[in-house]
Length: 509
Length: 67
Image (cartoon, each protein chain N blue to C red):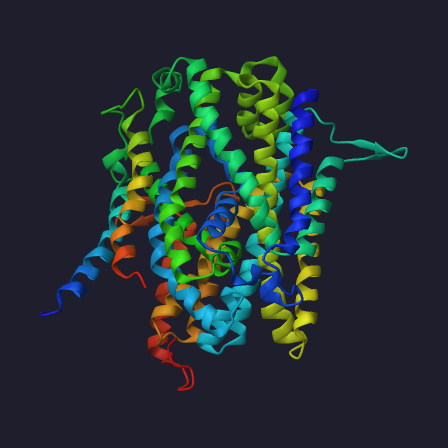
């Protein structure tokens, strides 16, 4: 345990905790209203939205897992780059309209929008439940990112408090603190903390891509040290597209799925105007660039040979390739900078975890509690239910990561991507195609969830790609995308058969 | 057919949004080492280059219907 690194790490953590509580007073609003607590009063301008979404979409887990995949598997891990390139044209095309509808009608969640458009409680419930279930394992994985850097600092995971040994004590402390200020300040807390997190992140990335290649003898040497077979995707064999179709479909499917996750919708609906949303589609790729550079850290870890260094053996044993980047930082940076870099990752876990739990809370409150349990709930009761739900969601994630093998969270998150994309016809296509029938959409949703889950089950949930056999060709495809195609086909075909259920009172927004 | 010029220009600027999809989804085009740039294989620098290009292609549509 290095005292300098730990001191800087703990000090930065304490600083953002203060910010989190103080955020309740920022752009003050009545936190007894759900749109104030859960959407920051829809008052975030272009810049705050940029920080918020940057902290939200590019999670700590992404920053650990993407270079880990590059470190272990090579070129395949770089799919994160085409994935984030494709996110923004989609965001630009769809979200200004979604924002405008939500703003006009006072909607807080994607399920609210579906409820209003199709006048169907069950379809809205399906969208809300999918969102909550897909997000929970994602929150749990944020803890993995935090766990890895805490272990990297050498902080003992089991602490003795008053004579009692408490396992996972640092994680417990971090999560209690996170839960407390999210409860207190709502979406304002992660928005404010995101500014600090992003500043630390950019400093870390900039230092890493300048200092580490200089130590290792330049980029040419780094790429030369990577096994030639992992440097590119395996070329297509006759009759089999192989890794290349898996790569392309993973990129496209992940881009579509990302924007349907509740934390993305919450972040975008909290923007103050359509203009702020559009501007962010243009400026958010700055984070993609950081992510692309971070992905390359996986290769730098290969070049530095961290896996064979005895001081990192225990870390790799506990966390596998997820330890590659922390090991690289410990190997290449002075202690004080390790403190900053690790704080960037740990704080980077807090921001998305907070926004995800708020987004789940919004969904539960609006589309389950108010819809099915207490239709006459006051604004204050609504806000109170959301606050408590955000606590429950985080406790669930904490329990998950402490009590169950990490592998379960990873597999569930993989399934989460396949599930959340099935809400695309109701949420996105519903904005444009007025003739869609809610029952047809519900059946399409079920067909997508069923077929997607089945495809993932064929590999025992180890991979999300499933080889389709089309016209004598073998096409490995991301299960989320192939099941979405089935979902859309079913929804469109059945809508033609069943006809539109729309009532005259629901004029187009 | 005889649409006013601004409307046609707006349509064209929306078509630009399809460019990143073509560039990123046709993987065989960029799954190669050469031409390398500063020792970085084509596969990597091509995809990294598309991050700023992807932002640039949004600009005409953004400026076109600024309200």
